[in-house]
Length: 249
Image (cartoon, rainbow, N blue to C red; front, side, top):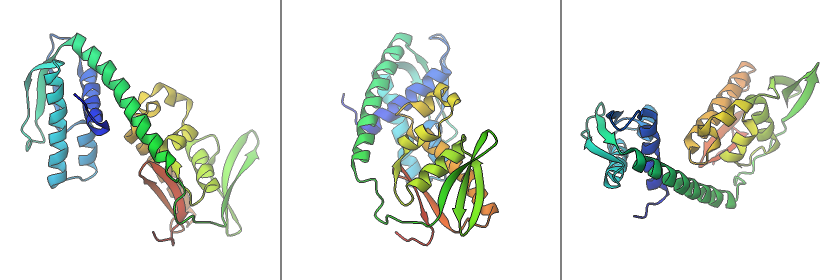
């Protein structure tokens, strides 16, 4: 059975959820219908037909695992019951085999997809410029990032933090897009190496959420200094960039 990247991702996400609930073959597993990537979208306000289609895709993923013999004795929730649950038992050996196969398959497809995005011109058409810049200054044994704008030097963050490294990168490439993978490599901290959600290619949404959180921290600093209306930050299509707010696309 051939599955494309998105289909593989759905099944892979279901497998990861099952693993998080798995105790033994003797224990039944209960997983909420509104979980995984569907819960993520729902929490962001997805409703109506779009939510229904996401739920159908989630049920489909569990049906695939049932056909493969990974799960059995399954009781499916109704599509319209967002408080419903999948209830089933698991074949441990088949689960281990499929988990390994889907992890490799999705990682390969996700990497190929991301490479195809990076092959495209990463320069955003506006190619926006700015007279502001970010500089690094050492104070004692600590390096800080400063935003130099309108004859002001605004301390943004310690350089050795996510915010510091991110603002330096964005201003070095002001108006140009950088891939989310490259950004996450720049802002990652030592503890992130233990977090598979940030190091594996197939968990792109987790990386994007970490980047967005870091941007919000930068925006709070800019707002305190009256600069929240000067710049626009963007995380779109696995690309990240900053530009002057007056620029329209």
